[in-house]
Image (cartoon, rainbow, N blue to C red; front, side, top):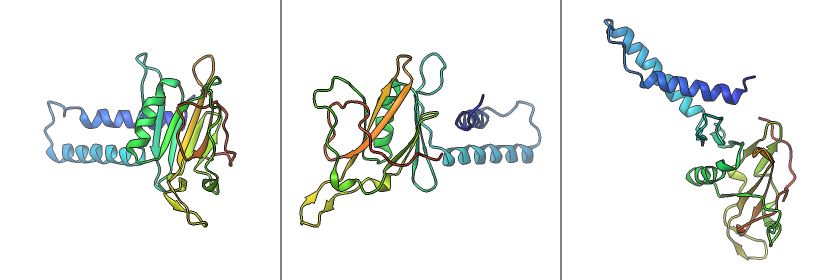
Amino acid sequence: MSTPTGFKRRLASELSAMATAPAPVGATRAPARRLRVRFAIAAVATAAATAVVVPTLSGSGAAPAYAVTKQDDGSLILHLDRPEGLPGLQKQLKEMGVRAAVLEGDKNCPTGAPPEAPWATMDYAMTVSSQPWSAIIRPDMIPDDTVLPDGRRVKGATLLIVAEFGKNHTTKGVSFRLVEEVPKCSVPGIGAGGPDAHL
């Protein structure tokens, strides 16, 4: 069965291939070719503008380990399928200017769950849908540097995303919270509550 995300990925791939393929040798009608090139360029540009998808592929031709798609409203749709996607996901979020840290949950983490930034929990910066696993990140809901009512200045929060993977190395669960300091490790299931994502 094909998912909308899978369809978008295949469409973007096919359109990219069409746009980069050389023109047929026997093409004689220049206006038709120009129209075709304009259409192909427009289609690739539309696909690129609609979805900034940056997958990490395994060598086996399997589905991407992660993908990030930027929406028109500035939110990001995130898919994480396997642990090998974590470094690429972290790098991509940083390149997109999102203050986020991505960790694999460690049940033996000596510091346990990191403390939540108490002043940063009024809105949900991320909502999660578990079947199939995906999330919506709202970068505008990650607080910047803030002056508290008591006059203390606190630095902006970071969205900590903690992924847990099953025995088959697929995503079992993802939890998140806004933190002041990013830990070196975290137990899985740190939770932040929040509504389900509606993708």
